[in-house]
Structures are given as structure tokens and as C-alpha cells.
Image 1 (tube, rainbow over the protein chains, first blue to last red):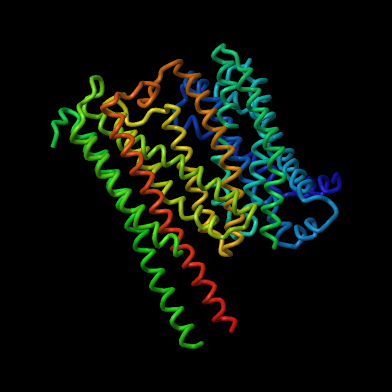
Image 2: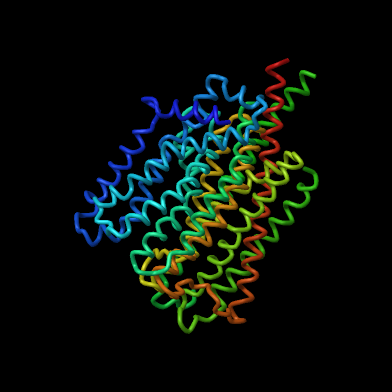
Length: 218
Length: 51
Length: 230
């Protein structure tokens, strides 16, 4: 399994692997918000956590269709399905790879981009942690969507339609865990629930996605 | 028509929208049912004739 | 099929009857509400449709489970058949809710937990219907949409709680929901029950009709495939 992780990481980090693309997209989306909403710092500060979360979520979506697609197309996925390695493990590794190359970098970038949106300095750490514990859910749920649509040509848009509703709880709790702190309120519940959703996704998705892959490679 | 007072607009449009949506989904379902039934009958007849 | 041949007309009559009775009773023969005026009449559409929107998804959940476990084709087809009805019910709930909201809250839309949850449900329905449409092989489609429905149900439920949390955080305690814990007076309650029955029978009738169509469609596809290979 470690070998699979290393291989997928290498593939993802190669040029065209989508690694830099997600970060660039994140930057662009964040830049666009002041253009759309106006440069008023007070307004931006208010919506910064939400915007950063939405931006990270959309950027995460970008590289999802690559999670299984390439291996599906060249038959590697069939090999993986028949190998002694459980398909659930394969799914988990691929979701983890996606997180390491998307969620993690985005979490690190968020405070920096937060400065562009007048995010208060003492919310920087919260923003990072909020995304850090919330983005695993995005990667795992995204992998589920990718597994369902892996057999489809041009399944990208459908993938988004299927996955985005699943992201709603993560988005709400994730953004709230920063907004509440900014308002001086207690954010423990939001944080705990955000983490819980990530754990839940980690628990459910490998099984659901493995089933979907088996169906698709039949 | 009962006296709906100042709310006649909202109440009537609520009923109108609901009616339209129900009629549309029912009509579409009926239309598709009839179409498929006819097509199936045609194919089944063809099968029977060809034995 | 023969069972539904006999059941469908009965259910249709029941649904038309209950709908007419409930709505006519509610619309013409009930008084205005002290606070809400004549807009209370919208309740006979809003509550039943909202209820059916949820029930339709629940039925799809159960049907998907049965398909995955027992592989009864009718189950998968019934789930597929129910989705468009569920979507329509959700739309009715959303529109009547918004139309009711304008005179009551002064705005067509408010991110009130209930309305928001229905908006989310609407999007879940869309995804489900889109997935059925996107896959050619019927058995594959049945499998994938079933898994989607199951996972989706979990997250739809989570969204409900997330939305309650989210809304509460911003508008502390403001219960904008019109059909909240206020006890519905007797005079409104009975036509409402009849109306709810009407909507339910309508749902059942339409799902039966559509499932029969799906079964015929599948039979047709099988015959055509046999022709081609013969």
C-alpha cells in the first residue's frame, strides 16, 4: 500500500498532475471575490472564512476526476481490483494522495490568501486548522464521486453535481468553526463536527467507492 | 371564491404553481406510459408473428 | 403487473378524491387565520408536498437497499420512477414556501433551516436523476444510483443538522418556520389531513404508473437485444 501511495504521489506531483493547478485556481477564485463584492475590508473580513472554504472546496473538485480515471483507462484499475490488496485500501490510498496534493497545500495556502481578504490575523491559525481537518472529507467524498463516474466519458460535470451536495455539512461546519471564533463565540462544536465528518467519510467511502469501482469495471 | 383579502395574489399563485407542477408531472408520466406501452405491443406482436 | 392493473385505478380514484375534497374544503370552507390571514390556505399545499418530498426520498432509500441486497429489479425501477415525483414535490414545497414567505416574512427567500434543507434535498434529487440518465447499462445504473442514494441519504441527514446549527448561529432563536410547533387548529387540521392523504395517494399512483412504464421499457430493451443477437 505504501508503494501505491508513493507511486500515486509521484504521478500527481509530476507536471500535469494537477498539483499546482489547484493552488492556482484557489488563488484566482479568492482574487475574484473582491472584484465581485467590492474592496471594503470589513465586508471581506466577514465573508473571508466562507470564501476560503468555498474556494478550497472548488479547487479540490478540479483534480477529482483523475483519482481513478487514468488507472481505469489503461487497465491498471482492473489489476488493482484483482490484486491481493483490498480495493477498499486502494481507494483509501488514492483519497489520501488526493488530500496530500490538494487539501493539505490548500490548507497551508489559506491563511496567506486570507490576508488578501482581510482575514483577521488571529484567525489565521484557525483557518489553517479548520481546512486541515475538514479537507480530508472533501478528498474522500470526492473519491466516492470519482468511483461512481469513472466509467463515464466526460463525467466531470456530473461528478461535481454528485459531490458538491455531499460537501455541504463539511462546508458549513468548517466555515463556521472560523466565523464563530471571529465573532468571539465558542467553536468547539463546529470543530468537533467537522472532524467527525472527515472521520465518517474516511470510514464509509472506501467501502462504497470500492463497490462502485467493481460495478464499473464489470 | 372566498374573500382572500390582500393575500389573494400569493394564495392564488401558490395554488396555480402547484397545480401546474402536478399536472405537468402527471401528463408527462401518462404520455410516456402510453408511448412505451404502444412500442412494446408493437415489438411483442413482431415477435409473436416471427415465432 | 396484474396486481398493479387492479390497484392503480383504485389508487388513482382515491388520490383524485382526496385531493379534491381536501383542497376544496380547505380553500373554500375554512376561515382565515388570525395572524396569517388567507395565506393559511397555502398550508394545504405546502405541508403535504413537503411531507411527500421527504417520503419519496425515504422510499427511494428503501428501494435502493432492497436492490442492493435482494436484486429485485422492480425495486430499482421503482426508485428510478419515484425520483421525478419527489423532485416535483420538492419544487412545490419550495415555491409554495417562498410564496407564503413573502407576505409573512417580507421576503421570498430566507435561509431558514427548513427551506434550506429542502433546497439541499432538491439538489440531491437532481444528482440522482442525472446519474440514472448518464449510464447506459441498466444494471450498472441501478447499482450506482443505489449506492449514491444510500451515501446521499447519510449526508442529506447530516446537512439537516448542519443547517440547523448554521442558521441558529446567525439568527439566535428566530423561528421563521411557519409550520413550526404552533398547534394547528382543528378547523384547519382535518382538511389538511385529507389533503395529505391526497398527495400521498397521488405519489403512489404516479410511482405505480411510472414503474410499470420502466418495467415495460426494460422488457422492450430485452426483446430488442434478443432480436439483434438472433
